Image 1 (cartoon, helix red, strand yellow):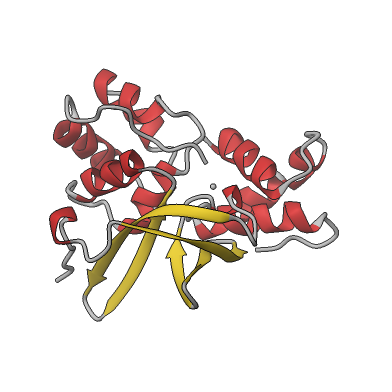
Image 2 (cartoon, one colour):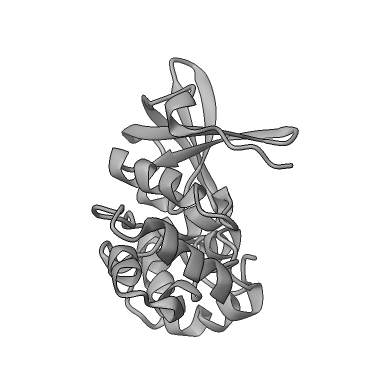
Length: 201
């Protein structure tokens, strides 16, 4: 049986440090010489060497534990609200929070828009209906703006494609976006990732 730490039992509130590395599914935050691996929806919102304050949620599931990072306290709160919904795990919650439309989740829940919610990886119709049932009227402002390397593309685009796969989107669907993203005019991994999320959702 899977167990989740409630937000009030969280071991960490936030961390201040320097971004040591950004990878498709996480950042490494150096805090006084200790590197913390923080799983994030859009790790490329940060750049190595940048000073950052990242809100953190510690999750223990079965025999595994991980630290999840967020750009704001609000995003962390929404993440924990999503985890209260039956059928939603940390990876699905993170994928929802990576959506570029800051009001999309709140509007979808308020209006009962099941089709919007089922566009996220791992969210079927039943789970989408459960999200609406459990969170209607509870979300203030929701999704936090965000975040297989394909050959023969710019490194920034390759990293963005890998980040989309890390969020749970099908590799086949992600690779189909490569040409569109390459022609989008974006030049940074963060830009490619945000545009990719728009196209997928």
